[in-house]
Image 1 (cartoon, rainbow, N blue to C red):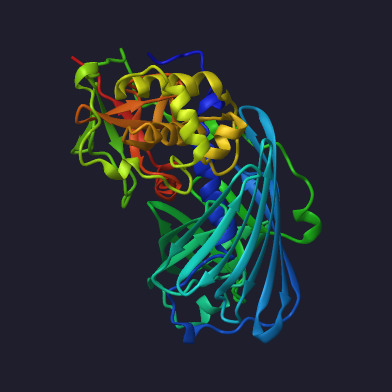
Image 2 (image 1 turned 180 degrees about the vertical axis):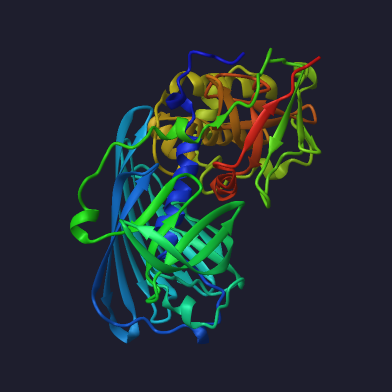
Length: 486
């Protein structure tokens, strides 16, 4: 059953990771904004050294700042240097975050290469990458592990810095929309967004009214509003998670940092109505979802119809019939972040499942071992199984990737689920696993040691970080109303 003594900070880091992904999409897409606009329409960036500063606000409190420095380079290239500092309040503990980015761009804002570093309590990462053809090839180093991968795009990657003059000189009209693929070097993911020009509108900023160009960007159901001046410089940008970037003079941007509101509770989904008795047989919820949300609500124990989600409790198969599912080969494959074929993962999986003579017992022993051996603490970073195994700490994402790697190494088809679960009267964002046994997918939460997970676990996404960023569109727009049983 659900362990009510768990605090949100001990296992619900998916909230932080998703907010962080959206935050860095905001922070870095202004420098990694890959436009499908015709290259012939883009103006070359003026080759001159310049600096720009933005304050980062969360719920109207300044929690950080961004510094952008542009240098002219050879052959009409430009070098972008970006530095950012932020203080995130997680369960009333302030986590200081520092990042640095260096990127080489062509004169028409196409990405050539980048270097990125990120430091937070308990986690450090560096990433380097370059564009080869229409792909971004990168290498991620976490201090204990190196991950190599690439992302293929349909068009040559473009970058629009905080100076987006070309948007205003390409003939764009009010109501025009453009589909834009982008790359985020923090989450190392690539997605498409839709940009719409809303025309000019007055905006009150720091006591002054500015007549600014407004753009609305939609990706995975999330909407981001940006306001540009006539020079194409971003003056203000805001996200549905409550983060705002605001252009300020240097002296103001770099000073006056505050302790912001606690993030987990600020974005948790408040319970609509009463939950009643939590059944292990079936539960129903009425969901209010944002338009255009791309979610995985159907399948396994879940069914969705007319905004009503029904979750039916899983029956654990008998050990003798709990064979692994056929035709689930994809859920046995390793990935750059779920390194089930690594020697250390394989050796640990053999040790953890020693004495288990069937897949069901192997899955149970793996979940129990992770629950007992991982120190539960928020780790701001990209979770991968090998780093988690080496460090033996983390929260829901680290638990989920390590379970997936160990279970797949033991021959059990396993996938990663992301969604929400009930805690202290609200639904917090969370990650867990599903294993395929006896021809059925069964939920496993190794963070709270539930096998199967209780029926307040509502799944929205299946997949790793590349897929999980889709859940960001729910922030601030999701409503959940439990339907009481007669």
